[in-house]
Image (cartoon, rainbow, N blue to C red; front, side, top):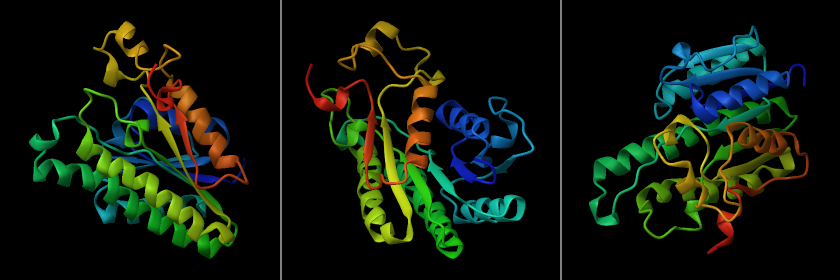
Length: 240
């Protein structure tokens, strides 16, 4: 994979750091971004790594990230929209500010970065890959997990990804989604494993490496576009 260049958002910890390390291990040059990615100790140091601090909801962050990729590595071949926030509330308790926070990171962050990356890919005339991280909850709600407004934003990424995939298919730009279930990250360090295991029919949760494997697969799969790949132990299948 020499000379391939990837941008990864939300890269400082958890899934994002795992994605950054996985792409570096596969030989990619990587531009990693998050609010405090320059301080992250979870990312492997490399001369093929550039870090850009910034709020992904700010269009200036997307501009700096893309400019860094071009200046440092010369091109952009892949984008992973991993940055996202998630919190649950009863629908009637979500506030306008809650929506603004969710939309700024989950939707506007996707929009600003993806638009600039696609413009660059079109100018390069050799296609490329965009993979975004969402959740099976967008299409398969779970009783008691009240995430309606959060899913308004995540489900929007599923929808726009399919439309962008169709729009740029003839340009060789593939657009896909990975939808993880529960993943073994510090986010769940205080949740009992026995309980987490009950959230899928396979009675287990995913590792960060398994999510990275799915993203790398879609990044390299030349004939797959417009897909939502659920990595959730079968939870999207329904009741078990």
